[in-house]
Image (cartoon, rainbow, N blue to C red; front, top):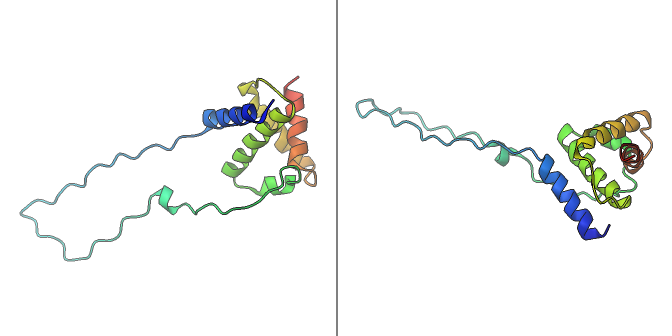
Length: 137
């Protein structure tokens, strides 16, 4: 599988599995009645939206073949899921797979995470290679 196909496969998997954020309906605030006096206190700033409150990602270099299982297990669930999708795509490219059973993705992820829990000093690539080879049979 060439790099273009691998990139297309990975991006397709990420798009298919991405969770979309619900768009908040921006309803205009009701205006106070004309007969009611305006409050004398200063308006409080509106709370930041979740997108504004999220920290900007920091550039962090990770060696794909050397990333450790112990580090994967300490990631927050969303980051662990993103890393899992990456490693599944990475293994698909390494095995030169032309197809992937999308229904098998949760099984691959679960097996790899179990492997990492049992072997925290092994690499994430080893965990996903083992899990991917079992599921693709």
